Image 1: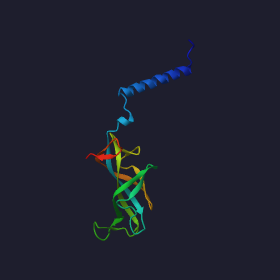
Image 2: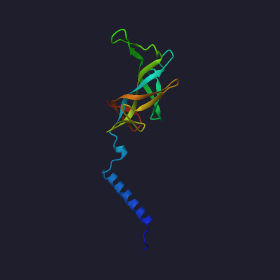
Image 3: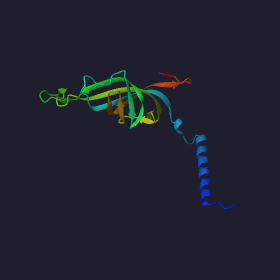
Image 4: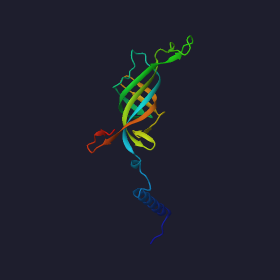
Length: 174
């Protein structure tokens, strides 16, 4: 039997550590990523767009359209727009107490809330879509044929559980 060198001992230690990690995973002492998913659910989230400049006749995002979502500068997917609420920027009128009027100095400046829905994996930490946790304050970009706006997520709601059967179809549970 020959003498073991330092490299041989490092390789043997690495194999032993890998075997221990595998044993702990099999015996459920260590939780893997797929075990952390508690459910798959339909979620609705709102994207707040602050200070959008639109000089056209109407706001470019419409209810029922599809918009492409980019999360943290990583393209995600195209989602359905379920609601759009756009408001022109307002200021308090100096003449009448507590009266909000449209800001005459910035007539093309709007704030908007765009509501979209998606299917997400639900974990202990919240909803996950595209490998990203969807939480309030997350920066996103929504993009369509005629627009590209940066915003932040302002609301996330789980609406119903979705069961994915063997045929790959989604069935809402409730």
